[in-house]
Image 1: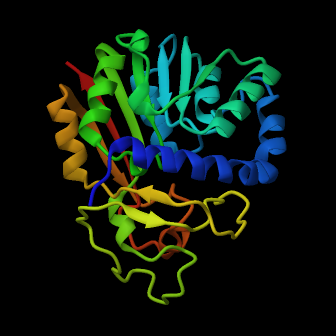
Image 2: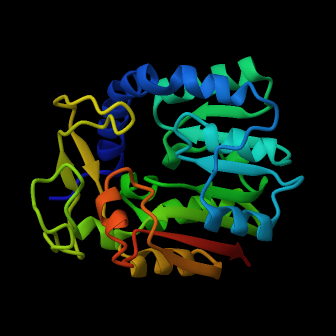
Length: 269
């Protein structure tokens, strides 16, 4: 039985607050050192960099939803963006982002909030809404999510999505014992959330029994329809064989030319 949106997001908040200190133990010092270099840019995916160049972040006001520890937003600021705001449900992640921005002198604002509770004061304030790897899988209701995104955007503003391809969700993860890495082991269409208690430490690799998490596998068609229903026209859509999930590197290394990630740009009409 499906539960209220806030039930899922509250549970996921607890799971991420548990996981982030493990991430930080493995990467915080290194990331601080990288961003202490003037103009440092974390983004390395050439496909994404080309799209960022095309929509041009120079002087743009950007909000990054599900921003985690803020490194992608800090990079956009270093690329010339104007007002930059990051939103994440995880208290620990936002504290890290705020601390790094202050320490490295990068002018970004980070706010701890459920995406469904974003203040209406931020509506009609941004030229770009950014979503990156792992965001959409934590979102229980795509239609409501993109309704809020549409409100955040100014007319002719863009939503930029760089995400894990739902096709990859059907395949074994790297830590799965199945020998055939291209064997389909999960359905594409799901009516219910996936309930997990597995480790969320994809950074340091700590294996622990985690607090319960709820993961949602949204199809490409459900994504497209949520955009359409909320007045966002698709301007670019490309699929890529590069893994950005930290869980399907073995499929990427096979060079099987299957979709593991995608980039979508939508424009508010």
